[in-house]
Length: 157
Image (cartoon, rainbow, N blue to C red):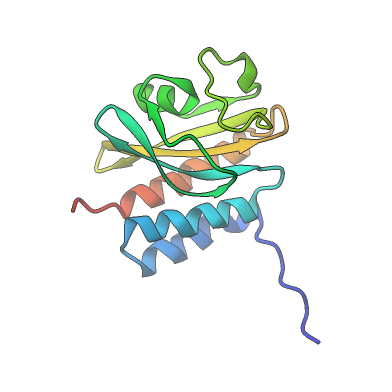
C-alpha cells in the first residue's frame, strides 16, 4: 500500500508555482494550475482564482471554488479596488469593506493581489476565506510572489 500524498504547504507554494510556470507558457493553463495549487496549499480558503482585465472590467478567469461573479468593474469591490489602486488589498472583514461584492455569502475575509506584466496591470489574483482575518503578512508576501510569477508568464496575443 502506498503512503498518502502529502498536502502542499504554504512554504512549498512558491517553488511549486515556479515549477508550473517554468514548464508551460500558456497563461490560461498556468492560472488554472496555480489556482489549484493555492486552493490546496492554503487552509480555510473557499475560493482562489483570477480575474483578467478587459477594458475597465475584471472578467472571471480560472479558479477553484463555488461559482463566482463573472464581471467586476474596476474600482468596485475588493478586486476592483485592488485593480484601480494597483496595490494588494488584505481585508479582515469583507462585510465592513465599502462596496464589497458578495459572490459567496460564506466569505468573511479576502486578499486580492494585482497582476502585472512588464509593469502593465493585466488582472488580479483573488483568494477568499470563510474565516475573518484569515490572511496575515506571511500569506500576503507569498501570494504576492505567486502573483508576480504568474504575471511573468503572460504573453500578449
